[in-house]
Length: 140
Image (tube, rainbow, N blue to C red; front, side):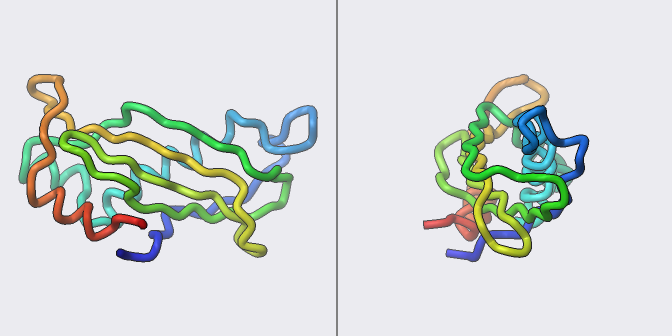
């Protein structure tokens, strides 16, 4: 088991806020979506490599955000994550958005990524080499 990977950092700006004075739900998605792109490279499974070596890549099939604690303008966040589950054709990634200064968790993002064959436009089994690499980042 590995420690969670750091996948991105950000600052909450006034334009992220809604009429309640905290970050609106719509603005969590870009932070987490960018982090999902980064996690593949951080795990040694960049999209270009997967395509070149396996003619496959991952696509997002499902995403769920859980909001834990409000964020306000000026807050600094760090996003970390790892692999929560490995299936036959998919894996689940678990990401967390925490305050960079206090460490308090503000949101969680669980995303199901499916191995995808761009030629057939269908899900495909995860190749053994990719499965082995994913297993190195399995969080327990």
